[in-house]
Amino acid sequence: MENVSLHTHFTLDGFSELGKLRPFLFIPFSFMFVVSLFANSLLVYVIVSQRSLHSPMYILIASMACIDLSLPVFFVPHMLLSFLFDWRGISLIGCLVQMHFIHFFGTFQSTLLVWMALDRYFAICTPLYYHNHMILSRFIAFLIPLVVRNVLMITLLVCLAGKLPFCLRNVINHCFCEHMALVELACGSTTINNLVGLMAVFLIPVLDFVFIAASYVVIFSSVLKSSRSGVKALHTCITHIMVITVSLILALTAFLSYRIRNGLPAASRVFFSTMYLLFPSCFNPVVYGIRTNEIRQHILKRLTCCHICQMGPVTNK
Image (cartoon, rainbow, N blue to C red; front, side, top):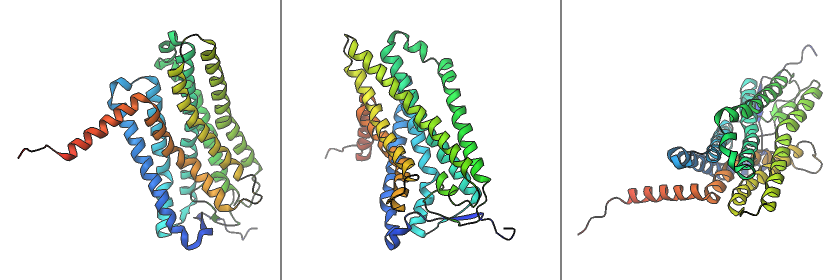
């Protein structure tokens, strides 16, 4: 074992099963990347520029758009270059840094959904005290424990992965540095890494979705028992539930695909893991832009103004 060399450079070999068809993946993934950048940037710009949208709910939507805007930047450009020019190499340090940012920003997708559920709970179940609950000091008091939890869990996860000896293979069957895809290449014991990975899954996305589900059960029960009309309130909740459902399905599929491998092709695992990160970044801003009436009106107004400006002044002959 003393003569065994440790790998410090890896090859990202996702979708290698496609052979000569692999470069064509550049087209759909680049399209999704452009849609994500444009839709999230437009959503953030509209909310920031319109003072009428400077309420807690819209600020949370803008925060989600910022996360969806940032997350693909850490892995999609490298992935597209890999498809187009076959640039697959990455150092161990670069891999760990990429892993940290991907998982760190990924955790805030579910955490922001928790804040959105809490915002809807206060708005629907305690409307008279909504602004008291959502003042900055109380909001930060609720925010800090979740931020600390995310930072500690992801930092521990990445540090433990960085201490593993990689002396078996240096080919990662993925398009980016996913935790389990890297850990499975280690030649030492990975029991602690697997336990911490499971603990991170339970303490962040699972715990978040349990809290979200409980919040919406209380919200729907309150609306059904109330004599007042809850159509508008339920409309905003349904928008959040659509985003939550898509995120949960993709997250569970990506998680289970690395632990239940019987009969599942490697390309399928890579696809679900990639979609878990990229698809919500395209889906979320479209859903919020279409289903949230105030945002939709401002977006249409902005796009109409841009179209008129491009046409230029009309001259009479």
